[in-house]
Every structure is written in structure tokens, then in C-alpha cells.
Amino acid sequence: MEHKKIPKVKNRMKKWSIGSTLIEQIISIVIIGIIGSTTGMFLSSGSNIFNQFQSRKTILIDNTTCIENYSRELRFAHNLIFADTKSIQFTTTSDTNLVINYKINSDSTFTRKLGNGSDNLIAQNIDFDNSYFNYYDINDNVGTPVRRIRLSLLFSVNNDSSRSTVDISPYTFR
Image 1 (cartoon, rainbow, N blue to C red):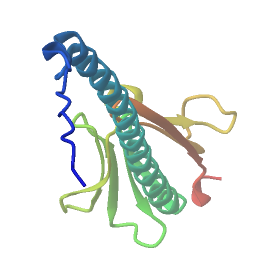
Image 2 (cartoon, rainbow, N blue to C red):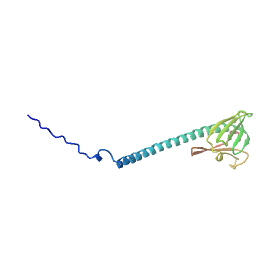
Image 3 (cartoon, rainbow, N blue to C red):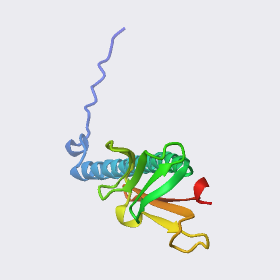
Image 4 (tube, rainbow, N blue to C red):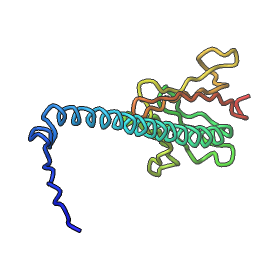
């Protein structure tokens, strides 16, 4: 049996069809760029939402702690020594010789000073220009004799803000 030689068929593909053209490469780069920028926008928006959540959380923690501590102590105010729109000084019913001073500071903090001690930070991120104390008489007019004290604090972090207002009528002022 004789074997016949089968002629080899040459790969007759044209030279220009072996690789990709410049236009195909540019289209691929454009598609990858679109997919990448879309993915980047999703990741960026997720990061912004997380940062906004963290700002709101900071505001709420400062807000709650500050207002609760201030309210608890001011309820037992006995003698009002000094009062203006940015600070208040008083003594409590338990110790009439110990002066307590709460102050809204221009460095965006709210502090408490006990006697001659140093200022203790109660809250930060306070908007100085939009936070205040108000003092109301028995007819709810601003004035004296003081029967009710309002503290209104505006907390601001990263363009996110929250206002807390609390009215306290100390037991001894009634």
C-alpha cells in the first residue's frame, strides 16, 4: 500500500488580520475607561455616604452628652451669679460655695468650669455665632427675674449641622 503525500495547505491568512488594529485598541481603551470611571463614581459615592454618616454620628454623640450633662446640673442651680448670651455662672443647691460656669467659646467648644479649676470640654464642633443662652421670666419674656433658661447649640461637622435646644427651669427658681 502506497501512501500518497497530501500537500500541506498553507495558512493563507492575510498579514493585516493577524493582530488588532489601532481603532480596535482605541475602542477597547475607551470601553475600559468608561467602566473604570463608572466604578469609581460608585466607590466615591459610597465613601461620601460613609463620611456623612460619621459626621452625623459625631454630632449626635456630642449633642446628646452635652445636653444631658448640662440639663442635669442646671436643674439644681441655686443662685444665678452671672448670665449672658455666651455663658452662665451659678451655684447648686448641694454646695452654694462652689461656682459652676458653662461657656460657649469662640474656638467652637462648649466648656464647663468647676470652681477655680480649668475648663473641661463638654462638646466641640459648636457654631459660636449661632449658639446662645436665653433667660426668661415668669411670663416667658426675656428678662429677670429668671425662671427659665434656654440653651441652644448648633453643632456643625463637615457641612452637616444639627441644632439642640433645651429649656430648663431650675427647681429653686420656681
